[in-house]
Image (cartoon, rainbow, N blue to C red):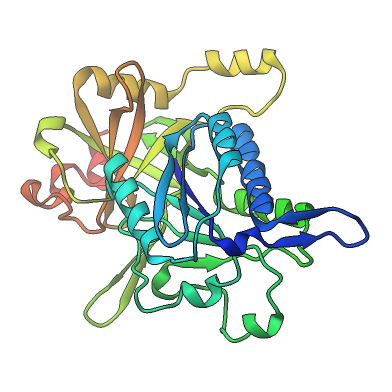
Length: 347
């Protein structure tokens, strides 16, 4: 649902890359711009709801474009970039943390794609690198003819503290290899999470955008990893005023799956098909209620009607912290509803 693109404007990005067997040459910044355009073209087709922001950095970091779905506006702005001084990575993390928090809060999953030079192999592993304050990962695309010996100084392309990973284009660097690198990132990152939303005998196939991430927590004697089930079961409803603002891990749009067919007749038929997801959204909005759903064993979430502006609202899943007391003032969530066995007996 949210992506930040960070573009390096240091002097090193002015370096020319000559294309073998041709007279063409491109600066690293031109290759970076080409890669961003490929990514935006992919989002325009496959993930139109994605909000994208762009920051530029060298020794400091500035917001070039705040979150928007106007991809043409972003394309126009990245053609007017100017080079600055040397590369410094910590200000990038700080600026992105502030940008995401001010726009979305720290409970919204945000992907960060950084395009920089080969210095990232060492620079992003320094002790002064702090993690993001929101759920998400950093994907670094280094645009440089870095020798394999320099890369092999590190065990893997994973960055420390779970910050993210480095994804290098194939060498030699060409517009084609850069495009392939960004296409690969797009296909791996912007994949909707498919699930079944169920309430009694009513059910609906839905997509969760962005895909929910697994949650890892250190317990007394073990490390627990929780994963969301592909079936989201609504176990009850509660007034919005009684829930207020519980601690949350992330928020996700819940959209009904549509038949992916280019013919207009099929699309029209799909739009006329009754959807429990649409029914639930309308009911929650009118009644000012929240649906409590079970995500997996002892892990719960809230389905709410959320508006990103005054005219349009969406069904949103708020993922709570794992456990049965995720909303302390309500007590044990299991006591708010009948168990599946009791529900079968009452039916």
